[in-house]
Image (cartoon, rainbow, N blue to C red):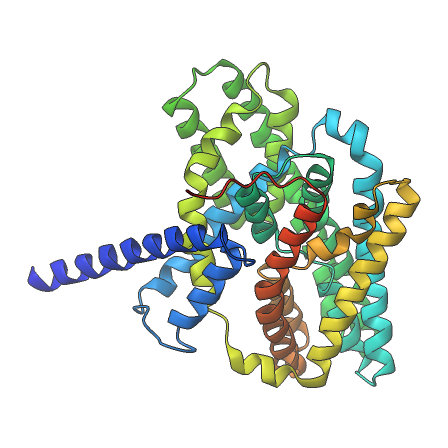
Length: 399
């Protein structure tokens, strides 16, 4: 019994301490150039196994669960940015910038790596991974700044559909990599990739319409919170069981609720926002603890090239897309810089590619894990700067 109490005490002390760290990060983020996301990831890295190794072993068992819950809520929140009203006014910038950023990032990544002498299959795989954006840091920076406006709505709309575009392109380039090496097994990845996208859309539709109906008729308060959280978790669990994208399925569900709920469209999103931050504290801290500095050194020249080419691809892509969309605000042309966070989905893509090309697993993981360290630390800070540059930050510092 005593040993059992010790284990429970360790769990409570650990999570209590992590939440206090989140509070400190929130306070510091209001008075320093670094957003709380970067501070949490950096703190997680310091207290993790790469530096101080203060986290107890059991915490890693919680990470996949917290990741699924946090990113499912993030996906659902992103869905509210794809309403008919917003797409009518901002659909052209969202479509133009998102597609252009994806194509330019992939094109420059492949061309640059190939010219550097990287094997064609590795260049194709990395070109398929590079366009992916990590949604959680972007959403949290927007929340931290209380940012509102057309620039912020466009950015969130682009991030919302980024997962679908990225998975489709990755599946196609993985097949191209298989053709270049004669590895026919990777053709199955196209089927898997298409199912992950369209299966997620179907799941989001099947759960979204009932949720929209319930949200329209349920009374406000705790009942709405229980309904929203319950259905989002059901969606995440079903997505994992069906092996489809849980972020995309939750996003589609959120889009349906935002467009088809009557009178109470904002209520489910507001209720989830009330419980979102504690989950994100744990998610970002544990994400930081999973970063390994040695991966940065192992990435070497290819990792440096990946870093530069991805930044240039996002810049040139947003410039082309904003020009095509006729955006008069110059901040839209630099929006690619607000889309630098890069983790989660890219790592999943890397592991999938490694299944088909096990001989390249070590190099692929070294590059992606290495650049993830950089993008997760600098990406949120640049996103924060870009939103402030657009004049849409409403952050109120603590007294």
